Length: 213
Image (cartoon, rainbow, N blue to C red; front, side, top):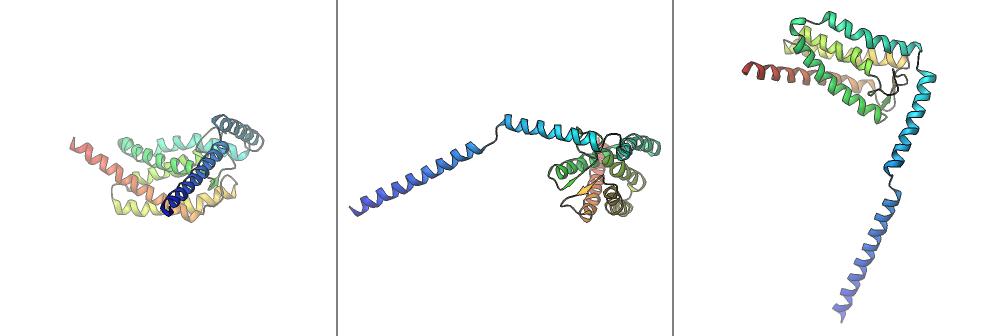
């Protein structure tokens, strides 16, 4: 009899647990956001962003700085790049750009930092001209100058990483074109440096593969 009652008690406990679990799942389903709701929120966000952009960005001095950076950076790079090694140097820049822009997109969307000024409200990452003109192209030129020897490249890349992290970023902050939320400039320094070293290694591996074939 005692064993029978224990079995019934266990079944009752199991039933109570299942009811609580089902209630919890039902509550989660009721609180979940539908795709239609998400799209409505996105529409509201972009409308707000467009209004902000027209009022605070478009045709301002800081906006023109981004436009000039977007136009002049590729021209300067094409003038300075070693045309005999243009594929190799461009490959390095492509890998650096993919990684840097990917990380920039994550950081800005995660609200680790933000950009008060944008060249357009539809461009992601938000500071594409800065990424290309101040980060990617200078690292490509460093690779062109010192990329044949790892020690030289290691030192030059470190110096450039320090310049971008401790000079370029604070300057952009001073111009109110970049704003750190939870990020610190010192975090950027090793990241710029390591990305350069990773891309150097990738290009060297690709060159070895090319020579074998």
